[in-house]
Every structure is written in structure tokens, then in C-alpha cells.
Length: 288
Length: 288
DNA sequence: CCATAAATGGAATAAAAATTCTAAAGATAC
DNA sequence: GTATCTTTAGAATTTTTATTCCATTTATGG
Image (cartoon, rainbow over all chains, first blue to last red; front, side, top):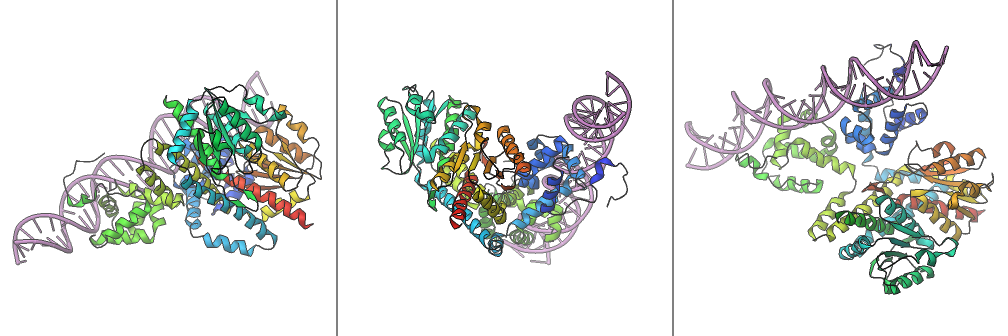
């Protein structure tokens, strides 16, 4: 050990703390949150967000991802009371080792916690399973060729108009965010002040509409999609059945059947699909 | 690379096989069981019995535990078609990292279908996997007691103010929809015309704020949550790390670490959590 | 039982990784 | 505004770790 060999002080104020399990480490980082210098705090946040990376990575690799110098990792570990980075890394590895067989553990803990906590947890579990189920189903229902066609259509457009109201509005809103980040011009029809039709009025044949609607189909979405089709604006639709009113207006349509729990339908699969469309479109444009 | 430089034969009979996932490796070892030399067979058995040790250990350490020489480990890896031990070790690490045994498998199947459709499909697969992974992780990170406390806090509120900007706005927007359907009074702070602060101005101690924010934290959300906390309005937060600026303002906070793919983070777990909160809150109110 | 090939152990070497050190930048107190 | 202490970046160094090589042993076929 290295107990008294340094009287250097300050930096080693931490000596003696050095938690030997992940939870302890987490708590320590939390308590120091406000007193840590910039780079160390940055590293603390990174470690909590990417624990597996810390467990498996090398000093150089982690440093690069976290945006710091390799030596900072060592200082970080020492400031927490460890011998060096390797020692700190051990904590992260141990956690990963243990985490494996704990499937049944999770259920056991759930059962032991009592009363209404259980109910809350099972609600969460219900929504999580519905989401997982939807994702699974989508892998079967979406055909790669259709997806490709949808991407091509959107990639050709100058501006993409995003159409989605009520329940699916979050998906359109996220598309607006993603397209923006990707440098693709997109306009979110948000119906503020009921100006939906006017927001769409500037669209031309060189643009495209990405329309999203699930049962019970919001009439505005179907109406605006129909208007767009009439004006020869290409329409890509995401919907939940062949009977959707969107289908008649759409040039390409993708089917997603979301599972529901407690009367609320998941949106996970739709989000994944929307993201794939967005990134695919941006990539296609970059190609030429 | 080192493709043709050895005509040594026998030992390298394996070249070209080298499975790139754990299951494939397992199958390969099984099929070779009877033709392997003593020490290599011994190692194969050891590896199947202590996969985490192979994932984390060093050549010297594993060799000692398995009762062979370090060089034997390298020979072992090469006889299976890998570049060296490090390459083989990667397979074991990947397995621990993604508890997602069928992810690679799905991609493999995908690659067998052809053309550029494949790329579109693998994008979709990537986002779907990220979503599924996030859901899985959330089951570990959200503690039932915290969830219950969050629900109680929200259930006591007269009006729930929904705070979420930029990337997570879709979640807040969906909460607005869900709370509305459930008959719970909720106000979505949508920052139209930058009126966020004014939209929140009517909140009192008898209300509550549901604030959502992930890295990179939108300053408005943190600011408004801080304002709310100062005015003694209960704050429930959904965020992605203990280092989030929301944590200091929150009475209860729930942690969700979403996985990302292609620079875009999933929102699935957050949605599931938000839904559980909404339905839980409505039920609690119905009780009394 | 000998000849030949395969397999093994162990030391030597090469590669990679962690750690240390120093000069410079940045805070903080005066 | 200056002096002092803390923090940081980056290169140099040391340590650890993987790999290669070769002499020796063990198996295999005639």
C-alpha cells in the first residue's frame, strides 16, 4: 500500500475514501459533484454514462472519447483515492461481472419491495414490454425495399413537411429535431393557431410530405395528406394498417403496429422507424 | 495482415473460420472437441466455463488459472482462426457488453438479403436495438420506491406543468396528451414565442413540475426547474445522470440512460417511464 | 523401434498500455 | 494587478502484456 509516503496534501485529500464497489463510487462522485475541477467532473459524468466503456476500454481510448488527456484519467482515479486508473477500472469490471446472473435477482427484489411500489414497478414493466414487443413486430412488418423507396423519396425533396397530430405529434416533433441536426431542411406542421393548411401551403412538387397517423386517425392529417397528393407532392406515410386513410394519398407507406398497455399505445417502433428514415435520408443526400 | 505468409499448414487449417460472435465460437469449439490436442482442449473447456475471466483477464493470469503456458493461449486463438489472443478476447468482451445475443445474428441475416435495401434495413435494426437495449437498462436503473414517490408527488398536484425542450420535447408533448386523456390537469410548457417563463408563472406550491432533460442539457429546462424549486413547487425530474443540472432542483428524480445509435439517442425508455408515471398518477388520484 | 510431424514449455522480444513529470494555463486570494 | 496555488496538456518513461521463437517433449505412421 501507499499510506504515508506522500505529504503532498491537496490532491490526495481523498486518501482513505476509495470505495470498493460501484455503488459506493457512484455515491462518492455524487457527493463531490460540486467541488470537482472541470476535467474531472467531465470524466465523472462520462464514467456514469458509459460504464461499460470504462470497464473495457484503454486509457487512451477512453480519454479520446471523453475528450480529455490520458493523464487526466490517472489523476481522476488518484483523486478518488485509487492507486491509478487500473485500480479504478477494476471497480467497473467487477460490476459488469456481477450484473450477469441477476435476471432472477431483479424479480426477487421486486417482489420483496412491498405494497404499492410493486404496482408502480409493474406498470413500468408493462410499458417496457409493450415497447419491446412493438419493436420486435416491426422488424417483421417493415419491408426493406419499401423503406429504401421511402428514403429515396425523401432524399429527393428540397424541403420535407412533417405532418403528425395529436398522439403521434411527438414523432413528427422529433423528426424536426433530427432533420435539423442532420442538415436536412424540414418544416414541422404544428398546427399552431390552427394554421396547419397555411403551413403546408408553400410545399411544391419538388418537396415531400412525411405523414404519420394511427387509429383513431386525426382528420387533419388525412386531409392535409390528401391535399398534398392532389398537388402532386410526394407523400411518405407511416401508419398502422392498410385501411388507414393515409394509404390512398401516399406514394410509399410503411406499416407499424404498436402494442398497447393500459389503453396507451407504445410509440417506440415508430420512433425507431422515423429515425431510420431521417438518418437514411441524410446519408443518401450526402452520397449525391 | 498475414494472409499467405505461412504455408506451415496443419496448425492453420482453421484459417477463414474465426467466428465473430460468441455463439459461433461456442459451436466451433464444440465441433472440434474431439480433434483438439490436449492443452487446447483444456483451454476450450476453461473458456466455456469461465467466459468472464477470459473477457477481463490477461494472458498471464488466464494461463495460470487454466494451467497452461501463456503462449498456449495465443496458439489456441490462432488455431481457431483469430489474429491472436486479443482478437479472441474481443469476442468474449462483446458478449458481456451487449446482452443482446441476437443483434449480430439479425445483422448477419440482413446482410444476406441484397442491395442497398440492406443498408436501410440495418439502420432500422440499429435504432430498434438501441431502443430495446435502453428499455432493458431502464429496468435496472429505475428503483420502484423512487417511482412510487414520483407518482405520489404528481398525484398530489392540482396541475402538472410539463417541462421539456429540444430533444426531449416529444416526451413532454406525449405526456400532455396522456394526462389529458386520463383527466389529469396538465400544462405543456412549449416555449411558443419564448413564453416559457410566463407559461410557468401560474404554478403554485399546490402544483408540480415534471421536468425532463438529457445531455446536452437545454439551459431553459434547468433554469425553469430551478425557478420552480425556489418557489417551493415540487419538482419531479427524468434525466440521464446524477450530474444533470436537474438533480439539484428535483424532489424526486428518475434516471434513464438511453442507448444511442448513429449519434441519435433512443427515447423509448423515457417514453415508457413517462407513461408509467402518467397512468400511475391517474390511478392514485382515482383511489382518493 | 525408428523417423517424422505435431504439440508444448519457457525464455526472449515486441507491442501496447499505464503512469509520471514538467511546463504552461487558469484560478484564487491578497 | 500581482503572487501563489491548482489544474491541465502533452511528451517521456516505466511497467505491463501479448506475441514470437526455438529447444524439448510427445504423439503418429511405417
